[in-house]
Image 1 (cartoon, rainbow over the protein chains, first blue to last red):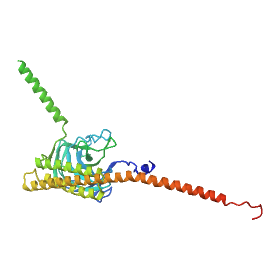
Image 2: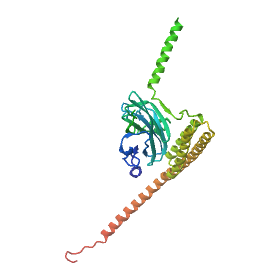
Image 3: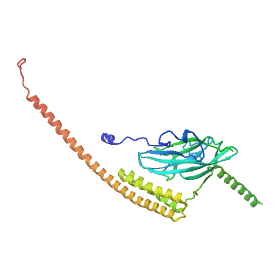
Image 4: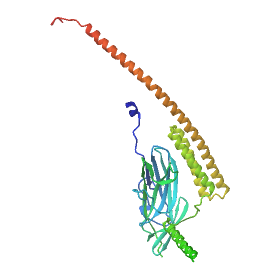
Length: 184
Length: 173
């Protein structure tokens, strides 16, 4: 019995790590010229990373969403994602203890202003997306939210966060920015 | 009269439901690509999910890490092909059909290989269990015999030690 207990590995904590790095793959230089007000057509380069500490092969999805100051962010307590449009998503199968990084290059290609509220057209990894319903006053305090989703083994559906020992956990992050509005 | 009233109520209710659905829907997003995946892509995605489940089963059954890593590498290849097909178009071009077919083929192959790996791992695990269960009594018997004869030898050596003792006068030595 003692030998069995000694040979049985201790249960380890199961979790994911989600991070975003600047253009030099460090936690700095997130904006061109270190200015969070992004001019039109200025390329912004980030790196998104996920590490799997779940102890098994996992299917991960990182969803990027555009929000403003008034948008409801994801809720970790009841594990609800942000009710915002998904701009782009990245999917990957990860081995245990594997880290995966992917570039996230974007720029603002157009800003449409309606009564001082700015609406953006973005180009993310060469995909052009117009977000019609998310606007920010004078282009201030936009944010890109990254959510980590996984494939639930039981239901075979995508879920926000992951399940571990009968509980749901979630990981998300956000990076704020302002959009430059052309003055006439 | 009653029919007209029912029709009016039905119209109000359906308008109410429709507006509720529109209010609760996430904000509008217009992309340069359409998001309607054609059937081929959906089928490939379904096959991908099945292949992924098969790989997970193989891992749970105790397949070796390097074998799982090789399957995962090809799973990611299939995933990239599906993503590429989505980007290329809506499944209308022959190129997209080809990409989707390639992804589906890889997924099918992976599913078969993962099942074989799972079965082999289960079989190996079964033999290991039998080996462990048969080795435990043998090991216990060996340990018991060793302890028994060890103790016996120790007692005899103690008795011999006592028997070899001599009585000597004090100060003689």
